[in-house]
Length: 264
Length: 264
Image 1: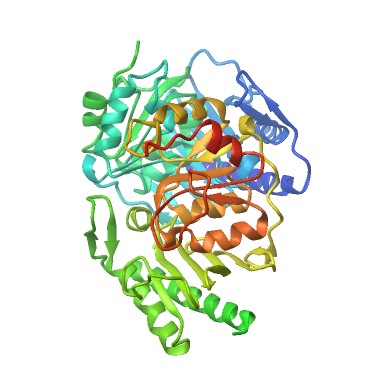
Image 2 (image 1 turned 45 degrees about the vertical axis):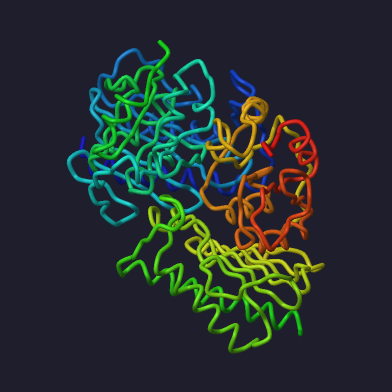
């Protein structure tokens, strides 16, 4: 498998899928809720995933697909080529804002990230990376992220994690709020990851993300020197949900050591 | 004073100022802190305000100016024409992200909002309004905001206000977090206001905003039917700092009545 051929193919598929998503704004959205009231999915999420799967299965029949909407394969291992896809990351933004959502895609071979993409559809900003070949913002090389210090940092964190919750001791998060320069919350894990790898945020964390939220971003993170682990400072497992942190160097260890206390 | 002539003049000034801000990215920023460690100002904030003042004083010598950086007039009343300007709203984003900041401008006559502007510089999105003539997103008319309900709402609120703080009882904010569909935080009051008037957020609130953060947005809000008050449900006073809420109809009363308890 030639990685550059695969890269061109994947980028083309992402751009065509994005065009379909944009044109969907002229028709009515069908919105459903999934497991929780605020976990939303639309017909466009589903159709976009099916569009990817149709093409990947036709052109790379021995590749497998792990997708948010569940139309892909039922995976129990990471052998061979696997496309890990979120057709629309930030569905709530997609519905309410018609912007601030992304297509997130990682292509892994035997569990190793080969290609990664985060495409901000409405701003036409494609962040991409190939293993050992660096990361790009559209056609411009992204420099390595700089070392950050906590007092001058801006952290991506949702307000839900600084109030009493079942995942994390919120006292540590309050201490963190008082220490950092500021916090932001954009409502799309893939976009918040894209903000860290391009230096716009210094770190981003979440209590529960799925492989498709982060697989593309993890490949990009590695190429720019951003650190990714779960909140217990362990490697991410791409076959299950994880807690998650991505951080510039100089900040990661301090965050997981001094501010983050998981409840179990 | 012909309002359409004033409108064209103000828009032109905003666009030229934005061009100067963008070109500043090729030179070094000088960053200072103001009253608090995280209250930042740059040479570009100052130069942009001076650019506005130079032109306004030359072309409208009897107009007065209230600006964030303090180069304008020392105002004790709202008589006559007053330009209320934040040259860069979201200075922290300007410094860290090189995006997600806005020029915010309101032009008031005897305390009444005549013209309002919020310009997202990097996305080239100008939201503007003239009293009784509606609001526009670039050249496209913005429809009246729709009635919102709390369970399906997305609220702009910074995490600082849901943890113990000196301004507001945080228990009410926690109750609010548990009720709404989601929260966001973008780090620029003007941009968050622009998100409400274009329907991307259902409400936005803050514990302390200055007249220049909100004067432009208030003119726009009125034209699209969004409700603006302080958090005690009183009118905004443009000569001092205020607590602030902007909301779609159907949500404002419930928020200020059932969730917001100010500490003094």
